[in-house]
Length: 358
Image (tube, rainbow, N blue to C red):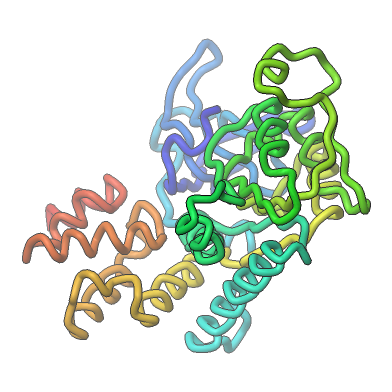
């Protein structure tokens, strides 16, 4: 899958076209995330973009026909967000303090819901939000706190966090392993499940709101037989799915129907951090709370200098995330020339070149 090859790079089409409803249509002025830069094929020149979030375009990568690289110009993420999601802009008059409190409240809700899942009150939850803002960390921290006595007694852990791609049969096996009451399976960035009909049906069975949840594997499998996994079992555990996919943005009708079916079976928490400003304020909030940079032993002035640098460079950074904060903090701890290194290693290439040259 090509999406996100040129992560966090955005363009505005100056002169280009795309076939909509069978007709070549000008898309001049439209902004997209860039997937692949200008190239040519038998039909001529084109640039590959991700049109998932752009109204009126397919939910996939598409080719915009154009004559040369001069047919589009680079824009920052803030400009792109404003062009596609005017409803996601911060509420009029919302101060920085109010925005931080709004964000903190969503993560407090995440903590509460995770605790409810551990208690068995909540049997299934989906958490949606942008990458690198602490979704996984918050869930994992709560589960580790609850599982500390299992570690001390060397008991079998009652939860597992699975990250990355997962097949349908792999999901079935994991659900069986954690099917006992009080056990939790966390699917972190396992979004491939949502695009596999078999895996999705297994997930829906695990999330079902019925008093008894039975999951079946209806085809012969030597893998399951060798592992001693039955072809049908009752699932009494809980599931937490952590995803970067914002369900409201999905435009594929087929996928929308599937996601609605998943959402109807469980609690769905959208962390509502759709703007660059929100992600920056989340970073600022975590730094202010004191835990994130504690090991660096920065002075108050150094911490503020770090925050100011990231804020000023927010439109040029490769991403706005807690990971980026720690990357730049590492450089700051390493050398007095940390800003120069940050511009070279943490910013989009074109932006970094301009800044280094200046």
